[in-house]
Structure formats: structure tokens, C-alpha cells
Image (cartoon, rainbow, N blue to C red):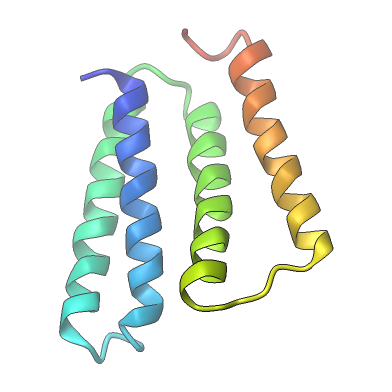
Length: 110
């Protein structure tokens, strides 16, 4: 499996699990709680696959950065949580950092 596809699946699993974590209402609702467990299990499994090729620091920066941005956007869309200007500026800096890592870092195997 391509390590970038594995990392993308890991990010999606983490975002789904984190979004379901709020819906689980502190693990008192069964279906969202099961989604949390499956989502994080999927995330860590596919993150381990991507670690075969990607350096752990680079992989984790991309995984956590994209997770932060995607969970924040979903929180805004689904849970009506507001994003103020400093949070949007910070998230744009995270996205910029991920782009810089992918375009210019010699640590990332392309």
C-alpha cells in the first residue's frame, strides 16, 4: 500500500473518531462510541503503515496538523462551533507548514 494513502486513511480515521467522540456524549451512546473505537483503531493501524516509509516526525506533523484543521472545520459545520480570526489564522499557518514540509523538506520521501 502506498504510504501516502495509508496516511490519508489514518487522518480520516482520526477525524471521524474525534468527531464521533463529541457525539458519544462521554461514551454514553453506543453507536458513536463504537465509531470512536473503530476510527482510532483504523487511524493508528494505518499510521503505523505510513511509518514504514515516512519519518515519524514528518508523518506526525502531517497527521496532527491536518487532523486539527479538519476536526475544526467539521466542528464548525456539524456542531456550530465558531472559529474566530486567530483560530483561522493559526489553522492557515498549520496548512502552510504541511505544504512547506511536503514541498521542500528532504526528510519526506517523494
